[in-house]
Length: 509
Image (cartoon, rainbow, N blue to C red):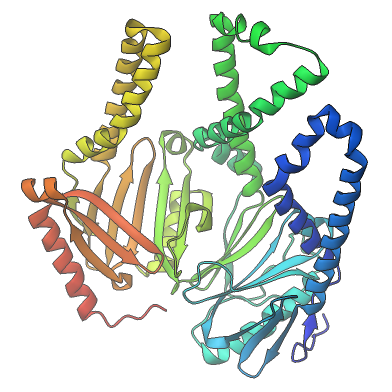
């Protein structure tokens, strides 16, 4: 592979114009879908102004493509001196300069448009940033790998401890991105289709169900409007007055919705993590996954803040777990921003854990369990929705049916809240903090003591009266909280952690 000269300003690949254009069109369609589409349902609108509407939309598309081309022409990057430079913008110009010592991760990714056009996205992450500070939309793969190698060579001169992998072109490589050429690279895991399917069926299907319900609620009025226009059906009389009174229909509809929600969850998880592969490069890890959007990320040992292991009864039965990594950021990370290693086995977790923390998973922990009053807090937060639902049910179903449903829902909440209380704890060893949470799912988080940024106790008026407190821990990836701990014991935990922080000489970023 010929080595490119990045010391002079470089443009993206010309196909980047289409990437920018398509991304902008998709973003606008999501935002203004009803403004563009709903007027077409009106017969008068279609008859009198439809042609003008088409001309206007065509003109807007032409303007959008022209603007995308200008963005492409003004987007220039180069390696200059001890920094990576980027100039961009059309109306508002900007210049970004990132010193090599600030560069933490260099990631490659491919969304569906990039895969169709056979280009890759290039991202540069810096210390303290939640998202990539520099994003290049379209580079040929060999150019992207060449740029990554040259940047890493520069970074290693100012950060000798960095373990990010360099790459070389391999004509026999089947993956979207080439494997690392580092001789110390080992494969931690590669998710086959069966394991991927296990991950899908053991995921929380309520997420898929909620997305389905949101989609249906959004299109509800649109659906009936279209049918009333084109099929001349009076749904208010035909549908609502007869079908909902049929219990069979209601039961079939509920079963169908649950199945569809489950199917959406399985498919979305399988698409997101398709072809998941994790390579170990010394004590760091390179993660690659995705079918529609192919993502390549690096988990750095010194940037990792929280490692969490998530499981549930189905995952335990299938002998798999999900592991998520939160890295240093200037903002609280959302679940979507965490790096996921799904379908990982217990031995693989131990290997990953020991590489990141330089410690075995088995530690001598001192545990502090949340108090049973934590259940009361959860019930109190749920009570408003519970009462509103009961009042609505009373209006439509009567007191007997509402009482039966309310008792059933209350029994479910009691079980869930009891499990949440039993699984809520914090524990401390000489080197680690371990935090437990969950209800049906079991979530266990691990934090290195020397990476804690601050810790404090907070009490509301009820906790002050009964001598309890919430323990709040801040790291560079966000906040962790354990509720309703015995105040005197929580103070001991706080003092021990502060002592370890003061006496530690370990550096991490």
